[in-house]
Image (cartoon, rainbow, N blue to C red; front, side, top):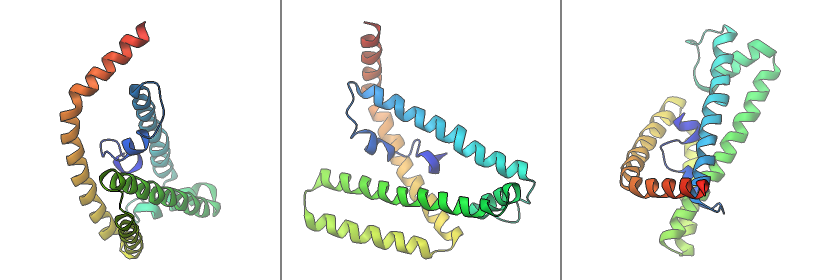
Length: 176
């Protein structure tokens, strides 16, 4: 769930913060709906395809397991379908994360040089990630996501009073 919808990790609020809504709680509820739909629909459907296909799930891992399961169920088109979907997910993830990084960098500095250096570093990271073994890439990602999530959870604790105030305000406005 953390990798598919970033719940608790703290990067999705960067995109949510750019939305124009009448009350911030409305956008928070939309974000929660996205987590719900992604986890219960996309992740569960993928798991059910794997479990119901009857393929040996100990023989492969990662995307190969999903490709094997779908190919077993619907034929050779399953392999191409999963490859296309993963390409779209990967491409949109790269764009989104680069956007998040740029907006955060621009919050701290308006320097065009800093932005250029960030874009070069992001490109190097994307290329390096594409060349790593699956196990090494996932280990690095796990470590980075754990560090980001710990920082975000600490921030959530400190922001709780403000969130409670906003939710109470939203509910009172909705009552009126």
